[in-house]
Image (tube, rainbow over all chains, first blue to last red):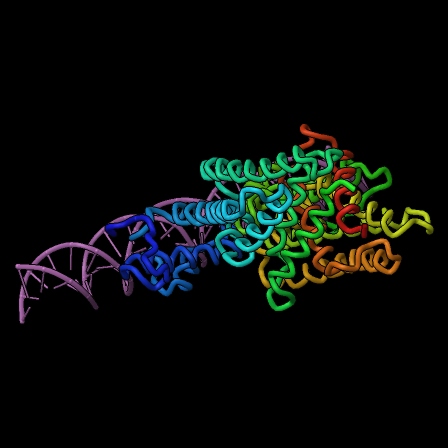
Length: 212
Length: 212
DNA sequence: TCCTCGATCTAACGTAAGTTAGAATCTAAC
DNA sequence: GTTAGATTCTAACTTACGTTAGATCGAGGA
């Protein structure tokens, strides 16, 4: 059994730092995210993960009790990464930022994480509907927490009169999140920069939700 | 071997009409769509399909040579249903409909099919990324055909000067399609009517893409 | 240098699920 | 009512894959 079960990013934050065992664990986790995002929950084979991580399949059992636990951790990490990055981005804004500046920032942060740290968040997004019941339940808790952030953003915008009150707030919020979550399906770094996509999305969303 | 391999909707169009064997085939296909949309490509077990269709698993082999062929047909049907319904809806519009009226109609048609005939289109949408390579290739052809329809809609709107030219047309198009494809993840008939969602979406999209 | 223990491997097991074989049943024509 | 063909079933086979057991390798301290 390894001494530390949780990944501990070391001082310099580089993925190659830390104890060798911790690095192997990270490699397997990242490999699992990659395979999971492409093959789906049931289609993710331990052998494929192992091949990407350059280990033998049974090595997985040194770090996780079962395949399900490894995959569940991928989903959790993917969810938390999104939540934390968005919250941190919002916290970095000046206190007097307008409601729509905050929404712009959240859009940018969400796209950054799903398009750049894409394997983990993609795995979480694409497989949400396929999770086994027990894991799905935990996932819903995290999802609600993230939804609350966006609900707050939209409510603030409505209260500030910056957003049209003539559309259902929930529907509008989910339309936006849908557009964001779908971005990994079509965006390709070679066809346009991330910054361009962010700017376009901010443009369209701002116009779509702003009163005339 | 059954005499007819392709589903032939009979005069009244009801799912219980036609030869008994054809009805069984339809039942299995619909069951496959239901399971596939929830469990993912690899997670869709023949036994689960059979249970929903009220048949034993080997009965599937009377109609399809292998599990893959059944699932591939579900994806094809889901894709074609969307394409055909949108194209038919557009064709029903008067010739003098404005570019944005046509986009509104396409939005309504797309949402209708993914939210109502949801099992087939959901199966196609959610599993696009997980398809085996050979099937994925065929799927991309259909996907391109559908993308062409939307590309045309957007181009017409730009040409008519109804749509802002200051955003990347492709990105805007994909953002809208993302919002539409994501709707099944959150829409629930008990929380609001389909008509309301359609109206809200049309509102937001029209504002989002229209020049000031 | 040797010993210990952490880390990973090779080999084997058990089971779930797709598939096949062949029997049983049902339908429709004569 | 009988028969032929269509349809569906039960039972068995096969393979893939998660998992376990136990051996092996490697690094760090005595």
